[in-house]
Image (cartoon, rainbow, N blue to C red; front, side, top):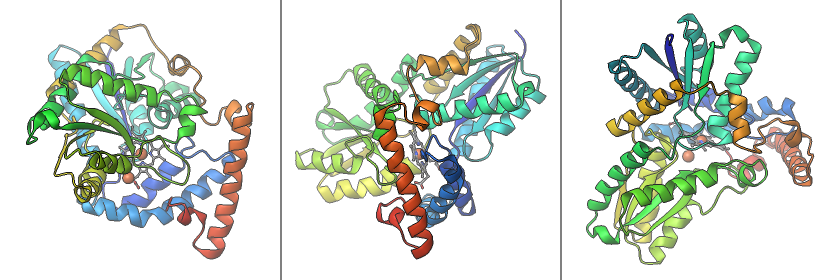
Length: 387
Ligand SMILES: C=CC1=C(C)c2cc3[nH]c(cc4nc(cc5[nH]c(cc1n2)c(C)c5CCC(=O)O)C(CCC(=O)O)=C4C)c(C)c3C=C
Ligand SMILES: [Fe+2]
Ligand SMILES: [Fe+2]
C-alpha cells in the first residue's frame, strides 16, 4: 500500500470574536444549512443573517473565552490518531478539513495532493450522518474534485457514519457512568441525551437519516451501559422560524422537572468535541433553566475529545476502511437511500407537491424578509428569532 492519508472532516469554529461574522457568512452560504430555493438569493441572505446574528453569537463566544476550541481539539485528535496509526507501522498523515473555517477542506485537499497521498480515508468527526454536516462536507469534496480532478487521490474510501462502533459506545458509556455515579442517588439519575437539532423537513421531506441514527445511537449506548436508569432524548440549538426536531431541550428539561426528576446526567450526543453548544448552551443556558425548574443536580458528560478508547475506535475505523475496496461519495449518498441534497432537481423544482409548497413558502419568506429588513432595518428574521 502507498502512502495513506486520513482526512478528518469537521465544522470549524471562529477562533476570535472578529472571525464570528465571516464564519457565520460561510455557514449560512451553505445550501445544506439553509435551503433557499433561489440560488441567487443564497449569498445576499447569508450576508444579511450573518451580519445581524453576529452580535448575539459573539456574546456567546465571549462567554467561553472569546472563540471556539474546535480547531485546537480537532488538531489534538488528529495528532493522537496519527501517532497511534504510526505506532502500528502505518506510513500515514492525518489532515483536517473544516467546512466553515480554517483549516478549510479546500486547503487540506491541496496539501493531500502535494504530499502525493495514494489512498485517502475520509472520516467525518460526526458519529451520525446528516445532510447538514457530513453530507455537506461530502458535497464540497465532490465539487472541489469535479472542478479540479487532479486533486483526487488514486484511491479513497468514505466513512459515512460510525455511531454503532463498539469502541465509541464503550467510551460514551464509561463517561456517562462516571457522571451517574457522581449523582447523590445514582439509581434515580435521569440520563438526558441532547442532540443538535435539524429542521423537521430535512428528515420528513429530504430523507435525512439523522433522527433515526441519533435514536438508535442513544438506545445502543443505554444497552452498553446496562443499568436501569431512565433516559430520554431531546434536540437543542434551534435556529430560525421553522419547526425543528422535537422535543426541544429547553422544554424537555422543564417537563422532566415537573415530573419530579431532580438529578440529571446531560449527554451531548451528536458531536465528539467540546464546542459552543456544550460549553455555553448546555453548561450555562440549560443549566440555568434546569436550576430554575428545581433540578438540583445537573451533571454534564464531557465530550470525547482525545479519550483514548475513542481514539482507538478511530484507529480501527481507518484501518478497516483502508483495507476495504474503494467506496466513493456517490455510493455513500446512494446508500443513504433517498436523501435529497440541495440543489438536486427533485428538491429544487418540486417534483413532489410537498417540495413545491415548501419552495414557494421559502421563496416568499426570503423575498419578504429581505425587502422588509432592508427597508426597516428590523424585519421578519428578527421577529422569527433567526437574528
Ligand atoms: C451534528 C452536529 C450539528 C448539526 C446537525 C448542525 C446543524 C445545523 N447547525 C445550524 C446552525 C448553526 N450551527 C452553529 C454552530 C455549530 N453547529 C455545530 C454542529 C451541528 N450543526 C457545531 C459543532 C457548532 C459550533 C462550532 C463552534 O464554534 O464551536 C452556528 C453558529 C453558532 C451560533 O451562532 O449559534 C449556527 C448558526 C443549522 C441551521 C443546522 C441545520 C440545518
Ligand atoms: Fe450547527
Ligand atoms: Fe446555539
